[in-house]
Image (cartoon, rainbow, N blue to C red; front, side):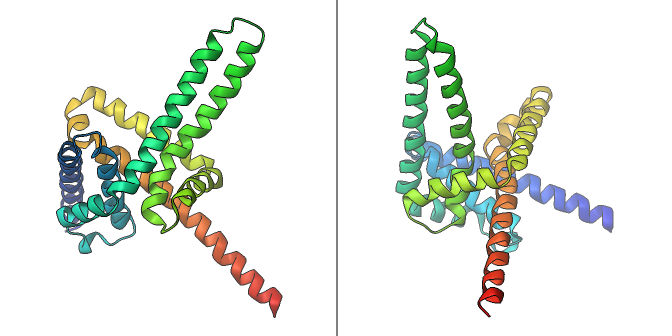
Length: 215
């Protein structure tokens, strides 16, 4: 019974993630890729967050995906293309600095690479923050920074697991085809949610301390 349970659970997760990846592809194409990619990513993360929180039995994947895609279509694109523009500006500055050919070049490049690294971490966490919190647009960027700062170890785990995913995919290319989107976003959402829980637990503890102090 126990082994049967493991096999059934594994098969269920494998099929769910494969179906979710298929929806990501279809809805990205539905939005002409340019407008559909980021809302589809958000929809994937929203469903995966429900699974991680333990609400997988209540999730109708297709219906939930469509609702998340539709409701977050504009905001997801605003956030996504803000990141794209920022990424382009960083690349442009690196290109310009590389053409200086003087003593400032290595110093400025070092600063820019450091900024690019921090920006990459923010880009990883901003969409998990978006699907978790109800906030103003600017606050999602702040939440993304907060999640990144609260647990740098989780960022390292994300990197290790994503590298492992592509390493396995190198030997079994079918995995990349079937789980590229859902696999990577699940890894990101899993560790981002652990960081979010850590933040929320600290807030609860701080509130309790303040209540005790007020008494």
